[in-house]
Image (cartoon, rainbow, N blue to C red; front, top):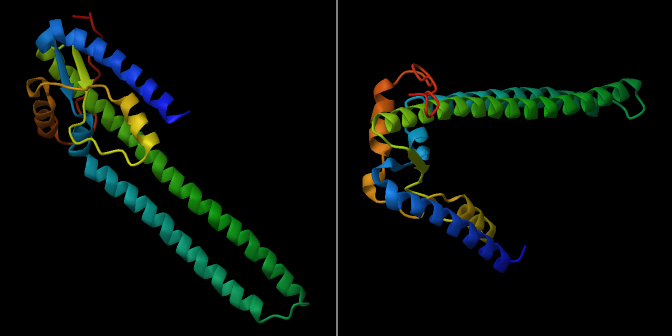
Length: 207
């Protein structure tokens, strides 16, 4: 896709979002709010523990890989001491190849498993954050809450720029519509574990 086509697509997407959001805000007023979900996740009391858990799992995987590497290095030393035509050398070389494949598979699997568990924990954390945002919104008569990141990083490539344009939901919002601080205060007050006391809010219209 050419840069011009990307820009046109991004512009049309932004124009549509701006039209929908702008039309809503024009008459809804305080019924529409914005929230920085990224900040709520980053500053959640459980966030650092999740990061530590991921690092521990990755470090364990690396430690196991290092042990495997030491065993393979020792086997290599044994192989070098044997004559090329020695049947035992052939066996050891075959064993070394199997060890290398197993070690590589085990390391990759452990890393992927750590990331899968981390992602699952983030999903749980995100669900608890959304629950608190929903509760705050219902309690304060807010009908729509849009995602807005206050410290959005700059794009580093043209493709990154156009992707961010498509994903950006809020172009402008007055500070009075931002509910990040009160929701964050509520989350920190709850403390403890993600999901503790966090039940999904009732469906809209269920009041």
